[in-house]
Length: 103
Image (cartoon, rainbow, N blue to C red; front, side, top):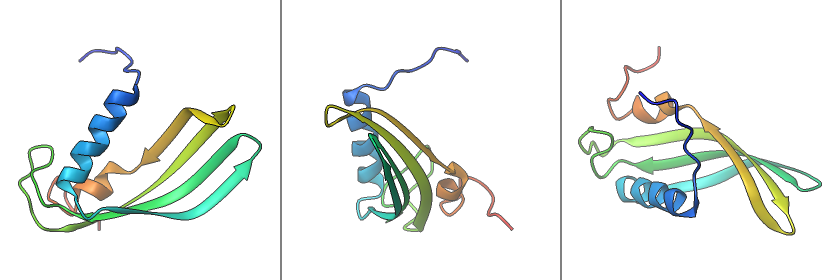
C-alpha cells in the first residue's frame, strides 16, 4: 500500500459523487447545523438514501443508509478553495452488510 497523498481535483470529486448517486439514487443531504465565521463555513449534515446498485463489492440490497458527517469549507474571493469532510463509513457499510451491525 502506498503512502502517496491523493490530491482531489474537480474531476475526482465529480467521479466520486457520480458513482455515489448511481448506487444511492434517492440520496438526499440535509444540513442539520450551519456555523459561519468570516470565510469559513461548517456544516453538520446527514446523507440518507437506498442502495440500488453494487457498492464496494456489496450487491444491491435495497436497504436504507443514514450517514452523518461534517464539512468545513474555506472560501477566498467567494470561492471554496479548501474543503474537509468527515463521516463514519461504518454507518454507511453496516446497513448494507459491509460491517457487522453495531450493538
